[in-house]
Length: 283
Image (cartoon, rainbow, N blue to C red):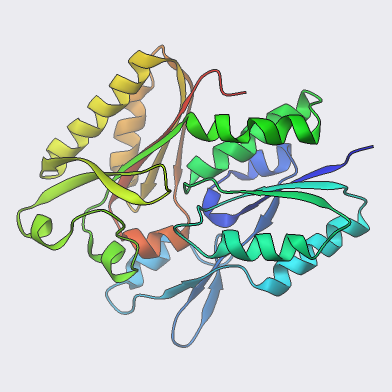
């Protein structure tokens, strides 16, 4: 009989409720300062990261190989036969490659490490979809077969106050930076089919960028009903405004508001507002 584990990393921004509901196994990334180290989503908050950015911009690190091996060993001891793993996309972190390597060394568990080509709840939504299928009694092969189709239904769009931190972290992808900052151009950033950041559209100033983001969301909702997560990084007020605006839209099947992980906050800086849009039917 199959016993299937769902595994993700802390940047997927799953709520504790979802983690408990689907018994998701979590691997936490790390935030490293010169003289101290923190565990993402465990002993540091996004706000603490933002408050300290003027003093020091920390490094981030994927979960340790030891943590990954320990998790798979624990799963083996608990009788798991299969695992489905997805988290931050392979173009944005080395976590994907490390997990593939570790999984290959635990032959007692049949494992699929799936590239979300996304981040935050773009990756988390895939885990939720897997959890829903497990609750429906779907088998491992059935769930794995649906992973590419789920990924195709997920879109991520966000605005940042400054591109400074994406540039410093080397995660700028195909987003043009320096000149745009001088002209107060605010790109609406998305993720392409290769899992790389790119400029979806541009606006002059934050207000116009927020309006453009709403236009993008409304266009998506005209195509189909959708689940939406409003995400913010050090911008609760703006995130709440967007959430309130969307709360009366009849084409939204599920609406949630949350903050991004501290690890993501290191690379975006304060002032991020974004959405993850998942087309229905998802599973």
